[in-house]
Image (cartoon, rainbow, N blue to C red; front, side):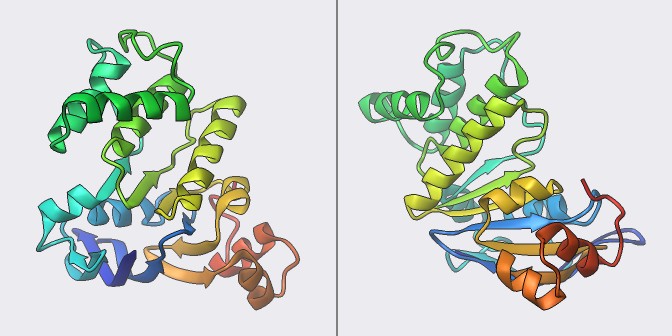
Length: 243
């Protein structure tokens, strides 16, 4: 479970995150929805300990991200926006390296890599060097690295960015399986269709603050709109950044 309370992060005079609070629960998919530059990625970076907040608290399974950094990193799997992979290594070697960083080895690690290769439909390129991989193949390798240690909490920053239709469908299926297995899944997006297709809970962020939150049905009811896109526009008070 992820709990965020009054989180703030400033870059000079820019208030990237300005008092964000929300919870993301196990066995549910929670989406951070908002226009580009709303503060979604900054919030995620605080959660996976890349940024230190200026104020507020963020807890992952009751661990404070500013105090228990190593423990937090062990309990999360992260797919960052535009995550790079080592092109001179094969897909299997990329995943194995991250597994070893998490203390895995031997048969346990090999079996886990095989399991992920099947889950993510990577069998046809798992033994190939990553140089020349398509964006979809790179994303699958990066996601497998994030999941290799079977983390309870999974953080995804715009996971379908740059993917084609089939790769996007495949990734959505994987996210649904993570939910079914009881994982806490939190991901950012500015794509309405993606959030509508996946999320149990939605946190709408605009200008660094939470403009609205709740289930898709609750957001529609609260705004008096029939569809989620109109509810989003009403919540942020603008059509800027809507896709």
